[in-house]
Image 1 (cartoon, rainbow, N blue to C red):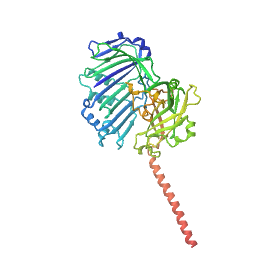
Image 2: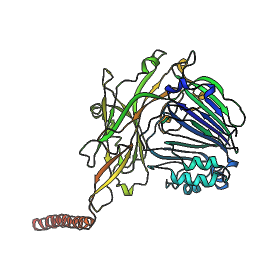
Image 3: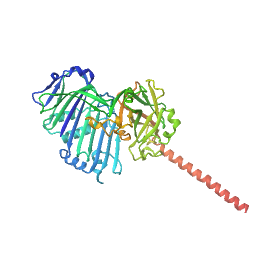
Image 4: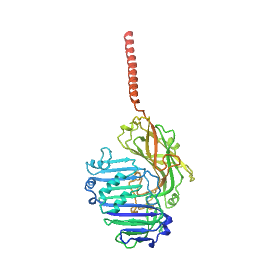
Length: 485
Protein backbone atom coordinates (compact mmCIF):
# COMPACT_ATOMS: atom_id res chain seq x y z
CA UNK A 1 0.00 0.00 0.00
CA UNK A 2 1.29 3.43 -0.94
CA UNK A 3 -0.02 6.74 0.40
CA UNK A 4 0.50 10.23 -0.97
CA UNK A 5 -0.56 13.33 0.94
CA UNK A 6 -0.52 16.60 -0.99
CA UNK A 7 -1.11 20.03 0.51
CA UNK A 8 -1.67 22.97 -1.82
CA UNK A 9 -1.28 26.30 -0.06
CA UNK A 10 -2.62 29.65 -1.19
CA UNK A 11 -0.31 32.21 -2.87
CA UNK A 12 0.01 34.11 0.40
CA UNK A 13 2.02 31.16 1.80
CA UNK A 14 4.82 31.41 -0.78
CA UNK A 15 6.91 33.68 1.44
CA UNK A 16 6.28 31.49 4.50
CA UNK A 17 7.54 28.20 3.04
CA UNK A 18 11.26 27.55 3.35
CA UNK A 19 13.35 24.58 4.53
CA UNK A 20 13.50 25.90 8.08
CA UNK A 21 9.69 26.01 8.26
CA UNK A 22 9.37 22.25 7.72
CA UNK A 23 10.13 19.86 10.56
CA UNK A 24 10.23 16.08 10.73
CA UNK A 25 9.24 14.99 14.24
CA UNK A 26 11.67 12.80 16.21
CA UNK A 27 9.29 9.86 15.77
CA UNK A 28 9.91 10.12 12.04
CA UNK A 29 6.17 9.59 11.43
CA UNK A 30 4.99 13.21 11.36
CA UNK A 31 5.85 16.27 9.30
CA UNK A 32 4.99 19.77 10.52
CA UNK A 33 5.12 23.15 8.84
CA UNK A 34 4.39 26.55 10.24
CA UNK A 35 2.81 28.19 11.97
CA UNK A 36 1.10 29.40 8.78
CA UNK A 37 -1.50 31.94 7.85
CA UNK A 38 -2.77 30.56 4.57
CA UNK A 39 -5.60 28.76 2.84
CA UNK A 40 -4.89 25.07 2.18
CA UNK A 41 -6.37 22.15 0.24
CA UNK A 42 -5.37 18.64 1.30
CA UNK A 43 -5.54 15.51 -0.87
CA UNK A 44 -5.03 11.92 0.31
CA UNK A 45 -4.27 9.28 -2.31
CA UNK A 46 -3.93 5.52 -1.71
CA UNK A 47 -2.79 2.80 -4.11
CA UNK A 48 -3.54 -0.82 -3.16
CA UNK A 49 -3.04 -4.21 -4.78
CA UNK A 50 -5.85 -6.78 -4.81
CA UNK A 51 -4.00 -8.86 -2.21
CA UNK A 52 -4.15 -5.94 0.23
CA UNK A 53 -7.96 -5.75 0.02
CA UNK A 54 -10.49 -7.72 2.08
CA UNK A 55 -10.94 -11.17 0.50
CA UNK A 56 -14.57 -10.64 -0.57
CA UNK A 57 -13.86 -7.27 -2.19
CA UNK A 58 -10.74 -8.58 -3.93
CA UNK A 59 -12.74 -11.52 -5.27
CA UNK A 60 -15.40 -9.20 -6.70
CA UNK A 61 -12.84 -6.99 -8.44
CA UNK A 62 -11.18 -10.00 -10.05
CA UNK A 63 -14.44 -10.58 -11.93
CA UNK A 64 -14.75 -7.12 -13.47
CA UNK A 65 -12.86 -5.20 -16.10
CA UNK A 66 -13.27 -1.78 -14.50
CA UNK A 67 -15.10 -0.17 -11.59
CA UNK A 68 -15.19 3.56 -10.98
CA UNK A 69 -16.85 5.37 -8.12
CA UNK A 70 -16.87 9.10 -7.69
CA UNK A 71 -18.66 11.23 -5.14
CA UNK A 72 -18.97 15.00 -4.82
CA UNK A 73 -20.34 16.84 -1.82
CA UNK A 74 -23.43 19.00 -2.18
CA UNK A 75 -21.81 21.57 0.11
CA UNK A 76 -20.64 24.90 -1.28
CA UNK A 77 -16.84 25.00 -1.22
CA UNK A 78 -13.77 26.58 -2.83
CA UNK A 79 -10.64 24.81 -4.04
CA UNK A 80 -7.23 25.42 -5.59
CA UNK A 81 -5.57 24.08 -8.71
CA UNK A 82 -4.87 21.29 -9.53
CA UNK A 83 -7.78 19.95 -7.40
CA UNK A 84 -10.40 22.07 -9.15
CA UNK A 85 -12.40 19.67 -11.36
CA UNK A 86 -16.13 19.70 -10.70
CA UNK A 87 -18.97 17.22 -11.06
CA UNK A 88 -22.62 17.34 -10.04
CA UNK A 89 -23.13 16.53 -6.34
CA UNK A 90 -23.88 12.89 -5.57
CA UNK A 91 -22.52 9.39 -6.05
CA UNK A 92 -21.66 7.84 -9.42
CA UNK A 93 -20.87 4.16 -9.85
CA UNK A 94 -19.85 2.70 -13.22
CA UNK A 95 -19.04 -0.94 -13.90
CA UNK A 96 -17.70 -2.84 -16.88
CA UNK A 97 -18.02 -6.58 -16.28
CA UNK A 98 -15.31 -9.04 -17.23
CA UNK A 99 -17.52 -12.06 -16.57
CA UNK A 100 -21.27 -12.54 -16.61
CA UNK A 101 -21.51 -12.86 -12.82
CA UNK A 102 -21.32 -9.27 -11.61
CA UNK A 103 -24.35 -9.41 -9.29
CA UNK A 104 -22.23 -9.53 -6.08
CA UNK A 105 -21.02 -6.03 -6.86
CA UNK A 106 -24.61 -4.76 -6.76
CA UNK A 107 -24.93 -5.92 -3.16
CA UNK A 108 -21.64 -4.16 -2.41
CA UNK A 109 -22.76 -0.86 -3.90
CA UNK A 110 -26.48 -1.25 -3.11
CA UNK A 111 -27.15 -0.26 -6.70
CA UNK A 112 -30.20 -1.57 -8.55
CA UNK A 113 -29.02 -0.88 -12.08
CA UNK A 114 -30.46 -3.41 -14.47
CA UNK A 115 -28.98 -6.28 -16.44
CA UNK A 116 -26.38 -5.02 -18.90
CA UNK A 117 -22.66 -5.86 -18.78
CA UNK A 118 -21.72 -2.16 -18.78
CA UNK A 119 -23.61 -0.24 -16.11
CA UNK A 120 -23.92 3.26 -14.66
CA UNK A 121 -25.74 4.29 -11.50
CA UNK A 122 -26.26 7.66 -9.79
CA UNK A 123 -27.74 8.66 -6.44
CA UNK A 124 -27.81 12.01 -4.65
CA UNK A 125 -26.06 11.27 -1.34
CA UNK A 126 -25.10 14.07 1.03
CA UNK A 127 -22.45 12.23 3.08
CA UNK A 128 -20.35 9.06 3.09
CA UNK A 129 -20.64 8.10 6.77
CA UNK A 130 -21.77 4.49 6.07
CA UNK A 131 -18.88 4.06 3.63
CA UNK A 132 -16.21 5.50 5.94
CA UNK A 133 -17.49 3.37 8.85
CA UNK A 134 -17.23 0.26 6.66
CA UNK A 135 -13.77 1.27 5.41
CA UNK A 136 -12.51 1.81 8.96
CA UNK A 137 -13.61 -1.70 9.98
CA UNK A 138 -12.16 -3.31 6.87
CA UNK A 139 -8.88 -1.47 6.33
CA UNK A 140 -7.65 -0.02 9.63
CA UNK A 141 -5.56 -2.26 11.83
CA UNK A 142 -6.22 -1.89 15.53
CA UNK A 143 -2.77 -0.39 16.05
CA UNK A 144 -3.06 2.02 13.09
CA UNK A 145 -4.27 5.13 14.94
CA UNK A 146 -3.57 7.34 11.92
CA UNK A 147 -5.98 5.33 9.76
CA UNK A 148 -8.73 5.38 12.41
CA UNK A 149 -8.36 9.12 12.98
CA UNK A 150 -8.38 9.88 9.26
CA UNK A 151 -11.63 8.00 8.57
CA UNK A 152 -13.37 9.13 11.76
CA UNK A 153 -12.71 12.78 10.83
CA UNK A 154 -13.34 12.29 7.09
CA UNK A 155 -14.44 15.65 5.70
CA UNK A 156 -13.59 15.36 2.01
CA UNK A 157 -15.72 17.10 -0.61
CA UNK A 158 -14.57 14.81 -3.42
CA UNK A 159 -13.81 11.07 -3.52
CA UNK A 160 -12.62 8.94 -6.44
CA UNK A 161 -12.20 5.16 -6.31
CA UNK A 162 -11.10 3.37 -9.46
CA UNK A 163 -10.03 -0.12 -10.45
CA UNK A 164 -8.98 -1.11 -13.96
CA UNK A 165 -7.81 -4.65 -14.75
CA UNK A 166 -5.65 -3.23 -17.56
CA UNK A 167 -3.85 -0.92 -15.10
CA UNK A 168 -1.77 -3.46 -13.14
CA UNK A 169 -4.85 -4.56 -11.13
CA UNK A 170 -4.45 -1.63 -8.73
CA UNK A 171 -7.19 0.03 -6.70
CA UNK A 172 -6.69 3.79 -6.50
CA UNK A 173 -8.43 5.99 -3.95
CA UNK A 174 -8.19 9.80 -3.94
CA UNK A 175 -10.03 12.27 -1.72
CA UNK A 176 -9.55 15.99 -1.21
CA UNK A 177 -11.10 18.48 1.14
CA UNK A 178 -12.40 22.00 0.76
CA UNK A 179 -10.21 25.09 0.87
CA UNK A 180 -9.67 25.92 4.55
CA UNK A 181 -7.97 28.77 6.35
CA UNK A 182 -4.92 27.71 8.34
CA UNK A 183 -3.64 29.91 11.16
CA UNK A 184 -1.46 27.52 13.14
CA UNK A 185 1.02 24.72 12.66
CA UNK A 186 0.07 22.31 9.89
CA UNK A 187 0.85 18.64 10.58
CA UNK A 188 0.68 15.49 8.49
CA UNK A 189 0.88 12.14 10.26
CA UNK A 190 1.88 8.85 8.66
CA UNK A 191 1.59 5.21 9.63
CA UNK A 192 4.44 2.75 9.74
CA UNK A 193 2.20 0.25 7.92
CA UNK A 194 2.61 1.93 4.53
CA UNK A 195 4.95 4.12 2.54
CA UNK A 196 3.80 7.74 2.80
CA UNK A 197 4.99 10.54 0.52
CA UNK A 198 4.14 14.09 1.57
CA UNK A 199 4.22 17.13 -0.69
CA UNK A 200 3.64 20.73 0.40
CA UNK A 201 3.31 23.17 -2.50
CA UNK A 202 2.25 26.62 -3.58
CA UNK A 203 1.51 27.69 -7.13
CA UNK A 204 4.68 28.79 -8.91
CA UNK A 205 5.96 29.33 -12.45
CA UNK A 206 9.17 27.59 -13.53
CA UNK A 207 11.08 29.09 -16.48
CA UNK A 208 9.62 28.39 -19.93
CA UNK A 209 6.27 27.22 -18.58
CA UNK A 210 3.81 26.46 -21.40
CA UNK A 211 0.30 27.92 -21.83
CA UNK A 212 -1.35 24.57 -21.03
CA UNK A 213 0.83 24.04 -17.97
CA UNK A 214 0.68 25.02 -14.33
CA UNK A 215 3.62 25.07 -11.95
CA UNK A 216 4.10 24.12 -8.32
CA UNK A 217 6.96 24.82 -5.97
CA UNK A 218 7.56 23.44 -2.50
CA UNK A 219 8.94 20.42 -0.71
CA UNK A 220 8.71 16.64 -0.87
CA UNK A 221 9.54 14.03 1.72
CA UNK A 222 8.98 10.32 2.27
CA UNK A 223 8.15 9.70 5.91
CA UNK A 224 10.63 7.36 7.56
CA UNK A 225 13.09 7.56 4.65
CA UNK A 226 14.07 11.24 4.42
CA UNK A 227 15.42 13.18 7.37
CA UNK A 228 14.87 16.51 5.63
CA UNK A 229 12.34 17.60 2.98
CA UNK A 230 13.65 18.09 -0.56
CA UNK A 231 12.84 21.37 -2.38
CA UNK A 232 11.23 21.01 -5.79
CA UNK A 233 9.88 23.17 -8.63
CA UNK A 234 8.06 21.61 -11.55
CA UNK A 235 5.44 22.24 -14.25
CA UNK A 236 2.95 19.90 -15.88
CA UNK A 237 0.00 20.08 -18.31
CA UNK A 238 -3.25 20.24 -16.35
CA UNK A 239 -6.49 18.89 -17.81
CA UNK A 240 -8.59 20.79 -15.25
CA UNK A 241 -8.13 24.50 -14.49
CA UNK A 242 -10.02 27.27 -12.72
CA UNK A 243 -11.67 29.79 -15.04
CA UNK A 244 -11.99 32.48 -12.38
CA UNK A 245 -15.75 32.74 -13.04
CA UNK A 246 -18.77 31.54 -11.05
CA UNK A 247 -22.37 30.54 -11.72
CA UNK A 248 -25.60 29.87 -9.88
CA UNK A 249 -28.68 27.94 -10.96
CA UNK A 250 -32.36 28.07 -10.05
CA UNK A 251 -35.74 27.05 -11.44
CA UNK A 252 -37.82 29.92 -12.78
CA UNK A 253 -41.27 30.44 -11.28
CA UNK A 254 -43.82 29.09 -11.85
CA UNK A 255 -42.41 25.59 -12.29
CA UNK A 256 -45.30 23.16 -12.80
CA UNK A 257 -44.62 20.08 -14.91
CA UNK A 258 -42.43 21.94 -17.43
CA UNK A 259 -39.81 23.80 -15.35
CA UNK A 260 -37.00 25.91 -16.75
CA UNK A 261 -33.56 25.77 -15.15
CA UNK A 262 -31.73 29.09 -15.43
CA UNK A 263 -27.93 29.26 -15.26
CA UNK A 264 -26.55 32.66 -14.24
CA UNK A 265 -22.87 33.09 -15.16
CA UNK A 266 -20.68 35.87 -13.79
CA UNK A 267 -18.95 36.61 -17.12
CA UNK A 268 -19.25 35.73 -20.80
CA UNK A 269 -15.48 35.50 -21.33
CA UNK A 270 -12.67 33.12 -20.42
CA UNK A 271 -9.64 35.20 -19.35
CA UNK A 272 -7.19 32.48 -20.40
CA UNK A 273 -8.64 32.21 -23.92
CA UNK A 274 -6.40 34.91 -25.42
CA UNK A 275 -3.22 33.33 -24.06
CA UNK A 276 -4.30 29.92 -25.33
CA UNK A 277 -5.24 31.28 -28.76
CA UNK A 278 -1.80 32.85 -29.10
CA UNK A 279 -0.27 29.36 -29.17
CA UNK A 280 -2.22 28.29 -32.25
CA UNK A 281 -5.69 27.29 -33.35
CA UNK A 282 -7.32 26.88 -29.92
CA UNK A 283 -11.10 27.16 -29.62
CA UNK A 284 -12.95 27.53 -26.32
CA UNK A 285 -16.69 26.94 -25.81
CA UNK A 286 -18.87 26.96 -22.67
CA UNK A 287 -20.84 23.84 -21.67
CA UNK A 288 -23.22 22.62 -18.99
CA UNK A 289 -23.38 18.95 -18.02
CA UNK A 290 -26.65 18.14 -16.24
CA UNK A 291 -27.35 15.11 -14.07
CA UNK A 292 -31.11 14.61 -13.82
CA UNK A 293 -32.97 12.21 -11.48
CA UNK A 294 -35.55 9.99 -13.15
CA UNK A 295 -38.38 12.33 -12.13
CA UNK A 296 -36.97 15.04 -14.44
CA UNK A 297 -35.83 14.77 -18.06
CA UNK A 298 -34.84 16.85 -21.07
CA UNK A 299 -36.65 16.29 -24.37
CA UNK A 300 -33.86 15.72 -26.90
CA UNK A 301 -36.28 16.35 -29.77
CA UNK A 302 -37.27 19.73 -28.33
CA UNK A 303 -33.59 20.61 -27.92
CA UNK A 304 -33.03 20.16 -31.65
CA UNK A 305 -35.16 23.23 -32.41
CA UNK A 306 -32.65 25.92 -33.42
CA UNK A 307 -35.05 28.81 -32.77
CA UNK A 308 -35.80 27.54 -29.27
CA UNK A 309 -32.11 27.05 -28.55
CA UNK A 310 -31.25 30.57 -29.71
CA UNK A 311 -33.95 32.06 -27.47
CA UNK A 312 -32.47 30.26 -24.45
CA UNK A 313 -28.81 31.16 -25.15
CA UNK A 314 -28.04 27.56 -26.07
CA UNK A 315 -26.05 26.40 -29.09
CA UNK A 316 -26.79 22.69 -29.29
CA UNK A 317 -27.53 19.49 -27.44
CA UNK A 318 -24.20 17.64 -27.67
CA UNK A 319 -25.16 14.49 -25.76
CA UNK A 320 -28.15 12.88 -24.09
CA UNK A 321 -27.98 9.50 -22.38
CA UNK A 322 -30.39 6.86 -23.63
CA UNK A 323 -32.91 5.37 -23.31
CA UNK A 324 -35.12 8.21 -22.04
CA UNK A 325 -38.84 7.37 -22.16
CA UNK A 326 -40.66 10.67 -22.71
CA UNK A 327 -44.08 9.38 -21.61
CA UNK A 328 -43.55 6.98 -18.68
CA UNK A 329 -44.41 8.15 -15.13
CA UNK A 330 -41.62 8.29 -12.57
CA UNK A 331 -42.70 5.12 -10.76
CA UNK A 332 -42.66 3.10 -14.02
CA UNK A 333 -39.21 4.31 -15.10
CA UNK A 334 -36.53 1.66 -14.55
CA UNK A 335 -33.42 3.76 -15.17
CA UNK A 336 -31.93 5.95 -12.42
CA UNK A 337 -32.17 9.11 -14.55
CA UNK A 338 -30.24 10.75 -17.37
CA UNK A 339 -27.39 13.08 -18.28
CA UNK A 340 -27.35 15.93 -20.78
CA UNK A 341 -24.44 17.91 -22.25
CA UNK A 342 -25.43 21.31 -23.64
CA UNK A 343 -23.22 23.80 -25.43
CA UNK A 344 -24.06 27.30 -24.22
CA UNK A 345 -24.21 30.41 -26.41
CA UNK A 346 -22.76 33.52 -24.74
CA UNK A 347 -23.94 36.83 -26.17
CA UNK A 348 -21.96 38.39 -29.00
CA UNK A 349 -19.86 40.43 -28.84
CA UNK A 350 -18.46 39.25 -25.53
CA UNK A 351 -18.04 42.09 -23.08
CA UNK A 352 -17.16 40.33 -19.82
CA UNK A 353 -20.59 41.02 -18.35
CA UNK A 354 -22.86 38.53 -16.54
CA UNK A 355 -25.29 36.53 -18.66
CA UNK A 356 -27.71 33.63 -18.37
CA UNK A 357 -28.87 30.54 -20.24
CA UNK A 358 -32.10 28.60 -19.78
CA UNK A 359 -32.67 24.85 -20.04
CA UNK A 360 -36.25 23.63 -20.65
CA UNK A 361 -37.01 20.47 -18.68
CA UNK A 362 -40.00 18.23 -18.02
CA UNK A 363 -41.29 16.40 -14.94
CA UNK A 364 -42.77 12.92 -14.99
CA UNK A 365 -46.02 12.10 -13.22
CA UNK A 366 -45.25 11.12 -9.63
CA UNK A 367 -47.12 8.89 -7.20
CA UNK A 368 -50.06 10.51 -5.37
CA UNK A 369 -49.22 12.35 -2.15
CA UNK A 370 -51.28 13.51 0.82
CA UNK A 371 -50.62 17.19 0.10
CA UNK A 372 -50.88 17.07 -3.69
CA UNK A 373 -47.24 18.17 -4.02
CA UNK A 374 -43.84 16.47 -3.93
CA UNK A 375 -40.29 17.79 -3.74
CA UNK A 376 -37.69 16.65 -6.27
CA UNK A 377 -33.99 17.32 -5.63
CA UNK A 378 -31.97 18.26 -8.74
CA UNK A 379 -28.18 18.63 -8.31
CA UNK A 380 -26.29 21.59 -9.74
CA UNK A 381 -24.80 20.93 -13.17
CA UNK A 382 -21.09 21.09 -13.92
CA UNK A 383 -20.36 24.23 -15.98
CA UNK A 384 -17.04 24.68 -17.76
CA UNK A 385 -15.24 26.01 -20.82
CA UNK A 386 -13.74 23.27 -23.00
CA UNK A 387 -10.70 24.41 -24.99
CA UNK A 388 -9.36 22.19 -27.75
CA UNK A 389 -6.90 22.44 -30.61
CA UNK A 390 -6.78 20.44 -33.87
CA UNK A 391 -3.06 21.14 -34.16
CA UNK A 392 -0.66 18.36 -33.17
CA UNK A 393 1.93 20.97 -32.16
CA UNK A 394 -0.30 22.43 -29.45
CA UNK A 395 -1.25 19.13 -27.80
CA UNK A 396 -0.42 18.91 -24.08
CA UNK A 397 0.86 15.62 -22.66
CA UNK A 398 -1.45 15.02 -19.72
CA UNK A 399 0.38 11.78 -18.87
CA UNK A 400 3.01 13.98 -17.17
CA UNK A 401 0.47 15.29 -14.66
CA UNK A 402 0.80 13.50 -11.28
CA UNK A 403 -2.61 14.89 -10.27
CA UNK A 404 -4.54 14.11 -13.46
CA UNK A 405 -8.21 13.24 -13.01
CA UNK A 406 -10.17 11.23 -15.57
CA UNK A 407 -13.65 9.67 -15.77
CA UNK A 408 -15.60 12.65 -14.40
CA UNK A 409 -18.63 11.83 -16.54
CA UNK A 410 -18.35 14.40 -19.31
CA UNK A 411 -14.66 14.27 -20.26
CA UNK A 412 -15.20 11.14 -22.39
CA UNK A 413 -17.56 13.19 -24.60
CA UNK A 414 -14.54 15.23 -25.76
CA UNK A 415 -11.21 14.38 -27.33
CA UNK A 416 -9.26 13.68 -24.15
CA UNK A 417 -5.86 14.28 -25.73
CA UNK A 418 -6.82 17.73 -27.05
CA UNK A 419 -9.12 19.25 -24.44
CA UNK A 420 -8.61 21.25 -21.26
CA UNK A 421 -11.54 22.07 -18.98
CA UNK A 422 -11.74 25.49 -17.35
CA UNK A 423 -14.23 25.11 -14.53
CA UNK A 424 -16.81 27.68 -13.50
CA UNK A 425 -17.25 27.55 -9.71
CA UNK A 426 -20.82 26.95 -8.45
CA UNK A 427 -22.31 29.35 -5.92
CA UNK A 428 -25.78 29.76 -4.45
CA UNK A 429 -27.50 33.07 -5.20
CA UNK A 430 -28.78 35.01 -2.20
CA UNK A 431 -32.40 34.21 -1.41
CA UNK A 432 -32.48 31.10 -3.62
CA UNK A 433 -32.81 27.73 -1.88
CA UNK A 434 -30.41 26.49 0.78
CA UNK A 435 -27.30 28.69 0.88
CA UNK A 436 -25.13 25.71 1.84
CA UNK A 437 -26.28 23.16 -0.78
CA UNK A 438 -25.57 22.84 -4.49
CA UNK A 439 -29.01 21.34 -5.03
CA UNK A 440 -32.16 22.88 -6.47
CA UNK A 441 -35.46 21.80 -4.93
CA UNK A 442 -38.38 21.51 -7.33
CA UNK A 443 -41.97 21.41 -6.01
CA UNK A 444 -44.07 19.24 -8.33
CA UNK A 445 -47.89 18.94 -8.38
CA UNK A 446 -49.21 15.41 -7.91
CA UNK A 447 -52.54 13.68 -7.56
CA UNK A 448 -53.84 13.80 -3.98
CA UNK A 449 -54.09 10.53 -2.08
CA UNK A 450 -57.61 9.12 -2.30
CA UNK A 451 -58.29 11.01 -5.50
CA UNK A 452 -57.09 8.09 -7.60
CA UNK A 453 -60.31 6.19 -6.81
CA UNK A 454 -62.36 9.11 -8.10
CA UNK A 455 -60.18 9.28 -11.21
CA UNK A 456 -60.62 5.55 -11.85
CA UNK A 457 -64.39 5.84 -11.41
CA UNK A 458 -64.56 8.89 -13.63
CA UNK A 459 -62.38 7.26 -16.29
CA UNK A 460 -64.56 4.14 -16.24
CA UNK A 461 -67.71 6.25 -16.54
CA UNK A 462 -66.31 8.24 -19.47
CA UNK A 463 -65.21 5.07 -21.27
CA UNK A 464 -68.62 3.47 -20.74
CA UNK A 465 -70.45 6.57 -21.93
CA UNK A 466 -68.19 6.79 -24.97
CA UNK A 467 -68.77 3.13 -25.77
CA UNK A 468 -72.54 3.58 -25.37
CA UNK A 469 -72.49 6.61 -27.68
CA UNK A 470 -70.53 4.71 -30.35
CA UNK A 471 -72.79 1.66 -29.97
CA UNK A 472 -75.90 3.86 -30.28
CA UNK A 473 -74.51 5.34 -33.49
CA UNK A 474 -73.74 1.91 -34.95
CA UNK A 475 -77.18 0.52 -34.03
CA UNK A 476 -78.89 3.62 -35.43
CA UNK A 477 -76.95 3.31 -38.68
CA UNK A 478 -77.86 -0.37 -39.07
CA UNK A 479 -81.54 0.34 -38.32
CA UNK A 480 -81.59 3.08 -40.94
CA UNK A 481 -80.15 0.77 -43.57
CA UNK A 482 -82.81 -1.89 -42.84
CA UNK A 483 -85.63 0.63 -43.19
CA UNK A 484 -84.09 1.95 -46.37
CA UNK A 485 -83.81 -1.60 -47.76
